Amino acid sequence: LIDEQFLAIAHDLLEAGRYIDGRGWVPATSGNFSARLDAERIAITVSGRHKGRLTADDFMVVDLAGNPLTTGKRPSAETLLHTQLYAHDPAIGAVLHTHSRNATVLSRRLGSDDLVLEGYELLKAFPGVTTHEIRVTVPVYPNEQDIPRLAGQVQAELDSGEPLYGYLIAGHGLYTWGATVEETLRHIEAFEFLFECELEERRG
Ligand SMILES: [Zn+2]
Image (cartoon, rainbow, N blue to C red; front, side, top):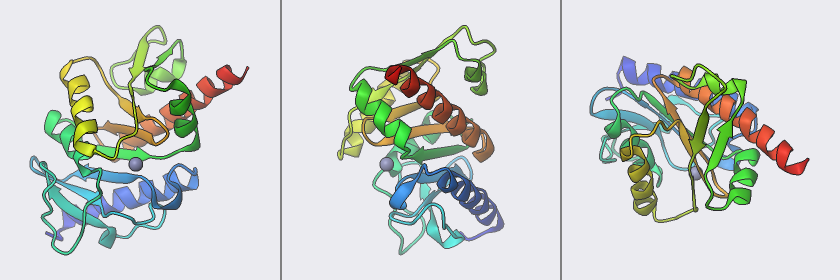
């Protein structure tokens, strides 16, 4: 399974990891990254590796049910939160999960309230958004070690058909996705900027 496409995808993700780590958004081996290989397989980071110092060896292949297709490697406990997105929408090509300070603090503040972002020009970073005059809702789920249960809550939101660009897990971090690794990085940057704005406003 170590083919050229896998290596290209691993390269995109390890470069993303260096950038994201440089911003301080994946401290202490936290977070996990994945990208689509084809209709039935994704490459995803192996559990417990530092996301700023990834090599191709730190990725494995799983199917969309989360079953390992690479022997001798253990996928992250949160793999299901990735695979459910790829299974839900064939246009999703990458999923990035980060543990930034702003996502952590803001989600703890919000508790179980959704984050509602409106009036920001930067909302145009999200696909299909052409004006600041829009409300983008970011669900906040309680943190959960029972990943299938958390995935069930996310699935209900996905099935509602409302536009969804990402979600927060309280005291934990952000999940966001896009057609490509590049687009998903743009979404992370936009979310991080907006989280910072929301925190500033709450302090003020
Ligand atoms: Zn996490």
